[in-house]
Length: 230
Image 1 (tube, rainbow, N blue to C red):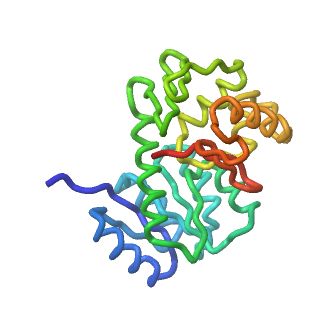
Image 2 (image 1 turned 120 degrees about the horizontal axis):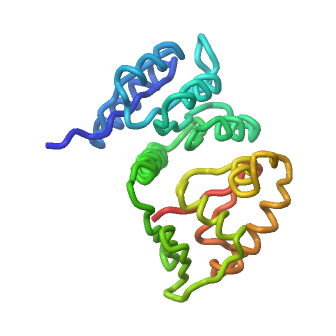
């Protein structure tokens, strides 16, 4: 039998770690644990987990610092699980390289869904060939720069296509305004959030049946956007 993905649970609360270990093991995951930032970094280096669940309120260092440090040398998916629910904390964690952010208290099924998305995203990043992204009637062929909606080709401007392609490459992940600005417009951009809003509205009018009630590109209020995966 193939072993399941290895999840590193980083949380200083023993009860949370115990609960997550039981829930994840029941779903076929293998689980490693860390209670401090130092233990977390060591565990990522030694155990090479497939995904990390990271609390921000660690006793020795802030989880945001751990996220920044890990991103200097590893692309392991990081799902933040924290009691901090301020938009500023979410944006900061995602800007530093976290793949997703879930606040406590949390639903087990939602956490499992976020883990699956993070793992799929990691597989896509490591794939040799650009994937054809499909979700409902939307299909994006990155290799041929082709976008189809219900089988009909949609013509996008260069900026619209770059925006959609970046969302596709990070499908399922919340992308902040700053991340989108730097990826699409360039590293010198970071505060012109209105650029993203304007082009996102244009893109939605081309690929969404009801732009005011988008199916594919969801808004994360105060944070950014997420391209839905099915």
